Image (tube, rainbow, N blue to C red; front, side, top):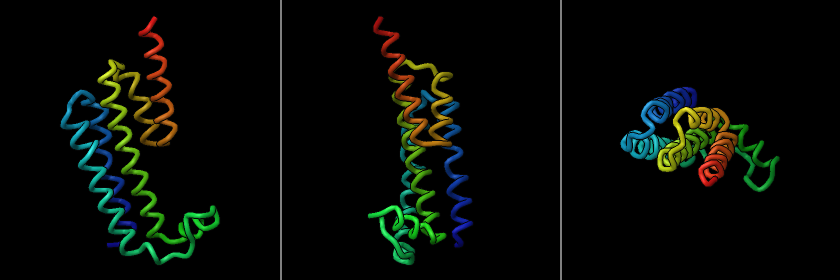
Length: 141
């Protein structure tokens, strides 16, 4: 299988998870088992396989920025990095959703945070923590 094919499959695999989080935020099967575990774990296995097979093909290391740039000179390692992002962003999005439902945060307030987590990872997590902080501050007055 080519890196492009795996890339396309990995990208498509997260879309149902994100859709489930947006449409069914209170459904435990959707938020915990599918988006929170099954899809991220499938991506983790994909990451493991790519790294096990192609992890030593590129020069470079994680010790310096230049070393990371060299690592990402390999299509396979860029693919592994992308799969890493997809898995962790969806896992965090599922956690945000479960946490928001537990704390009574409106799904309409949560949706922009989910979108930001899907598109920009850490910025979405930051936005969720800001929303959560504002919600706690508002509810304690």
